[in-house]
Image (cartoon, rainbow, N blue to C red; front, side, top):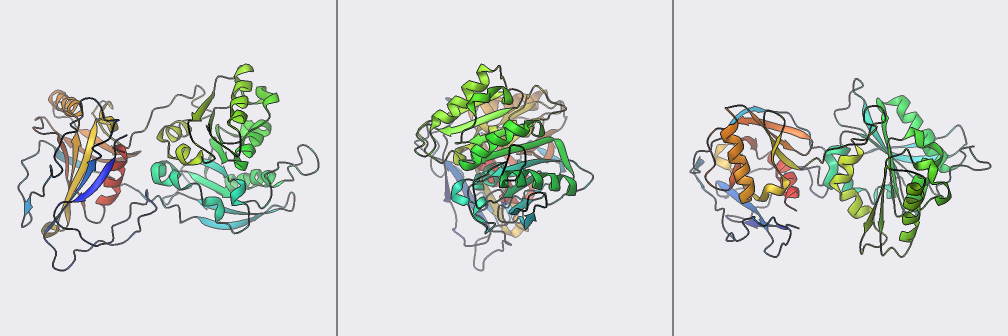
Length: 438
């Protein structure tokens, strides 16, 4: 896997970066030019020399300082680029794991009280239908503080915040085991029953897409995910149980539900065999929509690699009971350039590393250089030659960022993003592009 190392080429500056909420470890704040600083800042995201996952044709022998700052007194000396920006789109990269609505749900049907955290899109509109995720925490997060249940979902935001920011995410907390029922089967008297009732309340309160409701849980919540899918699977478009277990004697109950199972093979707490048995039971019953992802060498923390998995969320958000019964999906890259016919020209695998410069004498304008593999460069040049002057579109994660035209070929290995960002908004895009090279 490609590794990135940040090296400061001109001056290390202390500043607050306009937050990329996709990375919750970075705080939001205005970036200002420090006193006595130079006019320009250059930062390079470099590959690790020991990376083993680069394509065979990756240019992996670059010197450490292959991208020096090339601006002077605010005037760029970079050779003229073939790209001409034609349109810049409004984008929203507000992916903050620390900013939910927190309330307590008082369940009138069974008397339970259920604290919950609720994430609603920042640009929520009642005129739009939103997908919904019901997240069920593990035993380590039992309580009533309405905070601990969020401990293990950070990777959802860090690596897949663009998906999460456009859905309604419900995170209830229980102080006891997630049981569906209390006295008899079907009475929904347990806290898992209350989680179902909470889901019903959210559907009545917000504009939810009833065909795109998903459930996922880890450890104890993984067991709960299996339980809720077994009894109420018709509610959900997909389920993702992590390191849990279910009723392998009733595989037939799951055959029509798209399910992805993640479990560490070295899990000392909940045996991997639990998930293997569930997978086998569903397959034996004729299920074709279930997949098992053994996480080799992973212990009882399958949620870390699972919620980091870009493919998982590309798959999940494509599941739609009404319009996509086959479950087909496209992998959503962190970075891609698309031609006028909607065909992807280059994407994550074509990227080598990124760097950027900030020109303080030009209102903090930022140039971002995306260095390409040899194959990526060739594909981009071919597309430019065949474009006939028609526009290309740059996507970061799920969002359109800007469009441009280009007919001349690039002479080096660099795709430059120039004239689009300044010091207040560049960091969001840089962080996403760097994830493409991780």
